[in-house]
Image 1 (tube, rainbow, N blue to C red):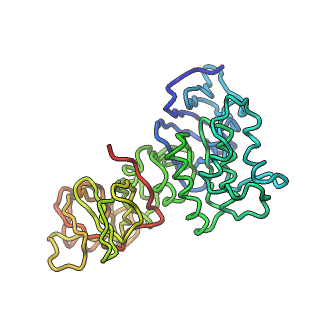
Image 2 (image 1 turned 135 degrees about the horizontal axis):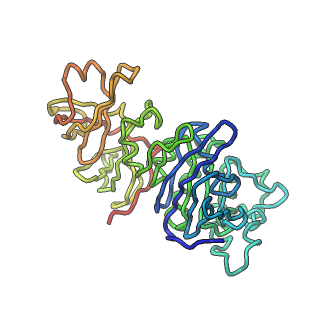
Image 3 (image 1 turned 45 degrees about the vertical axis):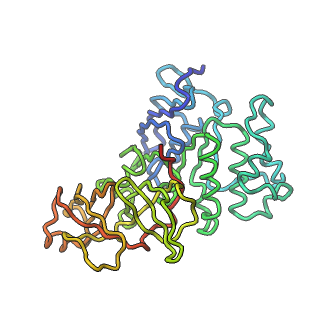
Length: 376
């Protein structure tokens, strides 16, 4: 039995028990990419397996792409093979005896012709593997194998694509190679993606909605920009790599000085030159350790980026075992500064105070830099 619902919404509210582990999660989103983020053992993979139908919840419901796939009270539990969900694992899991073309078309060939939404050549070109069609998996690099696995899942014409730590087995070079292809899929195909990761740079770059998990519970759900600006979530989103996420766009380039100017709601920020056209929307992460604060504006400073703002939140020093503390400042966008606890006390910085935030042009986190949402 399948119940028709809103085709743009992913609505999950489930409980599931595996041995001593109890999962209780709830989130709703209509965004292109939902990231499940948390440490190992937080429940990310259990959620994905429930979505795929590989694990049966004990209570609740799963509603995806216009269908109810599971509802405990209504006794609905659609079989995995009927859910039309693509699954990309940590390792590619390609069929070793089939060439790339055979791997790509394996799931597609099981579908009626009128249900096939994409041609193999289209997906292969989009993923940059069109020149590999006659190769065996053993001759491919890790990044190439993973792109073939993604293509195989897409050619099965899924209503939802699950990506469970798809880059965790790759080195940084291979990750950098494959990230633009995932961005391309997100922006062009319109297939919603549930993306599982414990790497914050992947989540910041790819996701629209972020679900933070710990010990089988959902701690927070919301836009990536909002979640990353919450100081109370620092123990779970990662304090060392803490940083605010800002939606920006390319204003222009200063070629002689090798700089690019990025605009945001209340101003602009200079960063090392980027290879993007004017108007391109980007998502920028500024790490807290690269932002400093003062109570007065700096004159004759070598720092190009100085913003006046208001203190919105201060990390509770009683909960931090560190000589530093994070301060959230609104400069027209959220920005986080990491300053010495002694400086916080000496300057007597409090919520509501006006401060000046300085950001070096070199502070941009390139690993997290990705294409953002188009401005209306």
